[in-house]
Amino acid sequence: MATHQGEPHRALPALTSAGILTIDLSAIQANWRSIKARLAAHVSAGAVIKADAYGLGAAHVGPALYRAGCREFFVASLVEAREARSYLPNDARIIVLGGAQSGEEGEFIERDLTPVLFSLPALDRWRQACRAAGGPHPSALKIDTGMHRLGLTPAEVDQLLLEPAYLQECGIGLVMSHLACADEPEHPLNQEQLHRFEATADRLRVHLPDVRLSLANSSGVFLGPQWHFDLVRTGAFLYGFHPQPLLADTLPTDLVQPVLQLDLPVRQVREVSHGGTVGYGADARIEPKTRLAVVAGGYADGLNRLLGRQAVGIVGEYSTRVIGRISMDLTIFDISELPAHEAPAWIQVLNRELTVNHLTQSSGALGYEVLTSLGRRYQRRYLGGESG
Image (cartoon, rainbow, N blue to C red; front, side, top):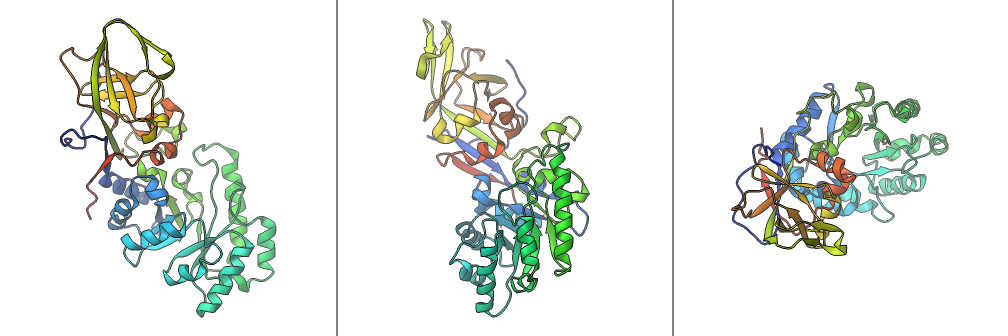
């Protein structure tokens, strides 16, 4: 089946022993600017670069976003925060979503890291560390508004407000929560969480009049300005995810720029003369004269979730499908529709048309799974990402 590939990111280097994952830093910058343009002037757009920027390389992605204008970065742990301090300028604010574990508080203060505090014991430890350091140090307070993951419960907020001096002594400058269903705009929990957040924030602001508020993730930005408050936390959108899949037909087609291109080298092209079966389990049958391309890349490289039985690859102007089970290091494509004289060197499985959103729809995997499961055996190329 012929298909239009669209403009490639750039010509590939000579054939190598590994697939090539191309990451367009300029597209990530453009996606951040697209979010920022949707916000009121007083609202900041932070960037979530946890899990190595969703597997794309935080040491490259973080500085590119800083050059685009981002100044607030969210990571998951102290380990990630240490790394971020090494590649981000000193004025970048690093907020650690997993908080400071017992015994880590002193290093947080020394490295100027902002922990997210989501339990009363964590608040107490942070208060003691601030006192030992001579005064408050910036922190964020997370409240649970209905996701029942991390965050203070309503009863714990009540208990905290019995001694409001805690809030000042802990240096709380940000109050945040997390939306559970932001990518489903009609889900009733979105409004419920908004109202709970507003009600709790009003109580806290009595004692913290200058505190900033943050509720929206990437998808939450598109629920409307009510969800924006003072700071939004952009993650998935930066890396090419559609923020509202259920509204894809009503939003601009170029809303989010694709970020990735993945090219897999062909190990062998073969024509099967007598028909038979393909791959483990012998559960895929082929007819005589079927042409197969075996590529380097399998479930050890994240392709077990990235490519399902209906997965498509691109060879020039032709599309080709996976056939048989994906194995640890290899995947097989049926290239029978290519001209007989063509022996492709590469098959492309991610590009400007075969996006992360396309793959999640065909495979059933979450976009987060797709990105974070891409293995480290690929060669990585970074394009763009300059200032301006």
